[in-house]
Image 1 (cartoon, rainbow, N blue to C red):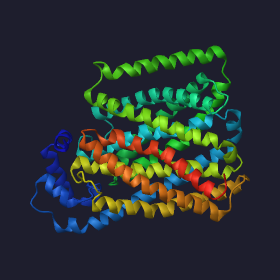
Image 2: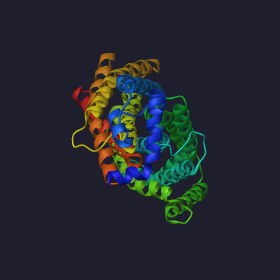
Image 3: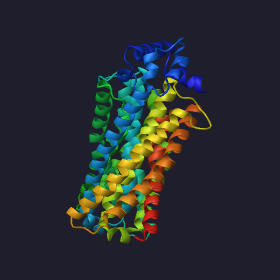
Image 4: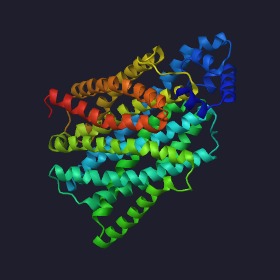
Length: 452
């Protein structure tokens, strides 16, 4: 099955051309190769130039630098999101049920557009797509992203409303659906442009899109999604009953059209494959994200009393998901070009990446605790002592990385083995599970420290 999928994505000519690029300039044109000896096997070359073998350590170091840079940038941006959370307490008190929608709404943006970035990265690496903003593959990816945004926004609004009602919160299902849809559609325009630009420009500059796309999209997703959620909240609350119903029916019609598009003659096989493989995973992911929102809902009173934790929450969750996204994107590219094959135990190259993520986590999650503390102080909101903020973030973050390492590896190789494109399913699985696991880890550590 692996050989069939591999043949579908890359023919022998492209493998030989890819090997030629490696020989010519390995750090610039092939930053994604984790094991040069595997490329030798797949491309049927007899030998690999010794400088390439000697540059493996340099390539790994380059991956580390690129990943750390993008995750630090992501952390800085996520703390801006934390500021929004900290100063938006009054909006949450106006509609407490919104806190149930926040994790799955943020997660949905990551699922859809990080997966888009991963698919673009794989297509660029395999030569199926050139970074010139043209082509049928790019068009199908754009269309699938908008269709998934509409469908998932409706779905998240419904399940968030029922979850909030189950928790005893006062909620109107039409309001929740409209808030979810407005925030989703408005943010999709910005997210789509940024995802394509990040993948193409990083590739042109010799960066590996797998190292930078997911963290950048995570960063933008948080900064863009939360303001649009609160903006949509005020817009919907301020609407009259007739205006709400009219807008609601318009979105429902668009949703119905989106459901039937994959089965129409207008859809290409590639578009159908994206939608058919992505939708079930994202439906499950939305449910899991809403469950993590219910955890926040149950802890709402405790968290609202310590706004410093709310400042930390977006950065903590999204950096955990971004680390998983980096691993998933790199594993997917490696599987497609043939430099990684299925193994019951993670191979040496994968274990090196695991260790790299733990080392990066020591830096990133320590900074999350530090920045959350000082931002909370600057906003004059209640916050734990500095050392407790650092220790809580660091312990919960390293536990999270340990889990996501194995999730990324096994989700990628198992899906690829069964003929499913990892770009369509692995990142949604990881980011959705990270919402619930990350929230659970953080809440658990807070309980152990006696904060909740």
